[in-house]
Image 1 (cartoon, rainbow, N blue to C red):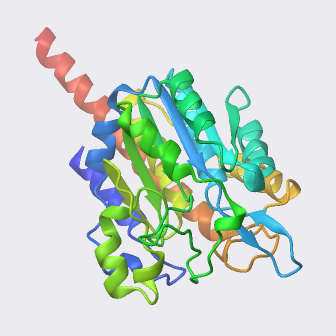
Image 2: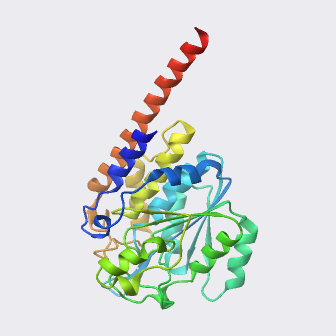
Image 3: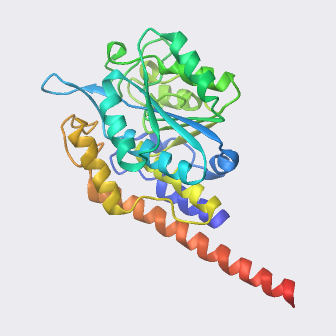
Length: 306
């Protein structure tokens, strides 16, 4: 198992987009996430990062919904009941992603200024796990920011409340981010504040039981799917063709690249091919682990029958 975790950590330590944060953080440790995913019965995933495009539209970026949909697929394949929550500005893109990869999973709309609805959603779903992936997190001043420091309070609903309500209800919390301004990544706020330009303003404050950072948030969506696959003993990752279809579905629904702010088959200005290379590296690591496990089980069986 350690070799598998080391492989995952090596892959997800990459920062080809040069965001910079990964240089200052400890190597990603998959072990806590693997342990946290041991008994997922009901999972609530929160995602959707809205941005203003050059032509004045409000659109959700491709990073986040794709990873959420791939996690939803893997969680559902493991028998968990799964829901995905987002707000009005990201709803069309998030639902398109879910429909593409996990059509049985419902997408829930979180409305601005309706805390009672957030409470009802948590009560109705009773999640055992809540997972945030590339979702704006509230900063120390109570506002929400992009990585460039632009305030985006007017673009979104306060899902920090939804996340904290789920945690208070007993849900184990996981957070995925790549810049430190994402919901649940507050464990890294000191490093973000000290080392990232403008980090003291944008750093998210809310913590999670497990915070997973990498160069592109979608990658940890695959990482979670790989960890679930290791538990289940099978490959739950999307194929390159499935991931390409997912990205096309997002673009058709109006999503844009979060860095260029334009529609493209890219994530954080990394071309699809670069992202698929990370996906295939994770698949290779998972398959090596599954082969080793099968060989060890076969050896154990020989010992038992000797």
